Structures are given as C-alpha cells and as structure tokens.
Image 1 (tube, one colour):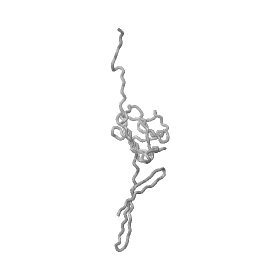
Image 2 (cartoon, rainbow, N blue to C red):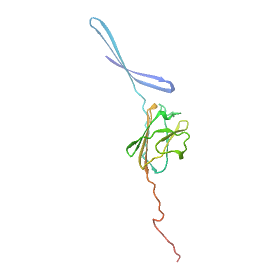
Image 3 (cartoon, rainbow, N blue to C red):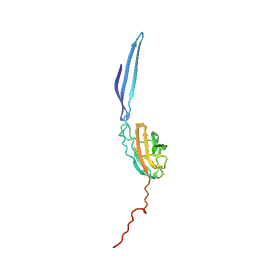
Amino acid sequence: MSNLVDVAASLSGSSSLGGSLAYGVSSSLSGSSSLSATVTIGLGGYAAPIRYQEPARIITAGKMILENVDLFLGDGKTRSVGVPVSDLQLMTFCNSSEVSWPIVSGIGINDIQVASGSVYWTEIINGFYTIRFFPSVIGLWRLLLTYQSYDQVISFTYDVVPKVATNLSIGVKTSFSRM
C-alpha cells in the first residue's frame, strides 16, 4: 500500500519549498511479527526564470563589448546583491569552438585596460552588474554565464564583423561649372 501526501514548508527570506511525500507501510506475520516502513521524499526545485535571448548583436571588430547582466534571487524579482566572481561559471565560444577565457573581477579596471583573453565582471551598483570583454577574432561569439546558486543561465551572442574601410578616392566624382 502506497500513499502520497503533499507537503510544504516556509523558509527564511520569503522562500517556500513544496513537494510530495510518498510512503508505504507493510507488515507480515509468519511465525514472528515484523513491521517495516519506507519513506521517500521528493523535493522539487523552483522554476528558473526564462530569459529572453536577443538575436546576435553586431559588433565592429576592435571594439570592447559592454553588457548589462541581471541576476535574481529565487523569487525571480529580487536582485542578487554582492555576487562574487567565484559564484559564477562562464563558457565562451567563438565560431562554434570553446575558448578558455576566465571570468575575472573588473573592479578597478578601466575600459581601456580590458584585454582579450578574459571576461571582466563588475557590480556597478547594488544588484546591477556588467561584463566587459574584447573579442580577439572576427566571427560569432557566445557567452553562457551560469549563476548556480539560483539556477540561472544567461546567454549572450555577438557577431563580430570587420571594420568597413572608407576610401574617399573611390566613388562618384562630380564637378560644377558656370554657364
């Protein structure tokens, strides 16, 4: 015989936890008596917020990329404050190949100091973050930023294109004369 009971708990910080408790009780009497019980507790997580992913942003080669990042607590509304680099994981791809670029603290790093090979993480004010990086090659770049504490993954995609050269000696030439 197996029974199923819904359970819920309120946790600190206005969080809650719910799930189902399945239990079964059996007994047998065959010369001696015994009683056994099995308790199985299934705890489901919360649904991670779904982030809208914009199409690839077009970036001209030779430009630093600056992106705003929003991270939230489990309620999906309250901003996470004071998230250190150590709480994040980063996967970086260029033209469908993974590149090993670490995410590092960008505190005290000016935009002019941002170099290829790292992604810089900065909390600009409480709960508002940016990443900065300098793509090293032309092509399609994708960053996956994971914040495991609250089961969030944010994806950023950039199409880094070559600079367009302007040559003023090519084109339509005109001249004006008085009549």
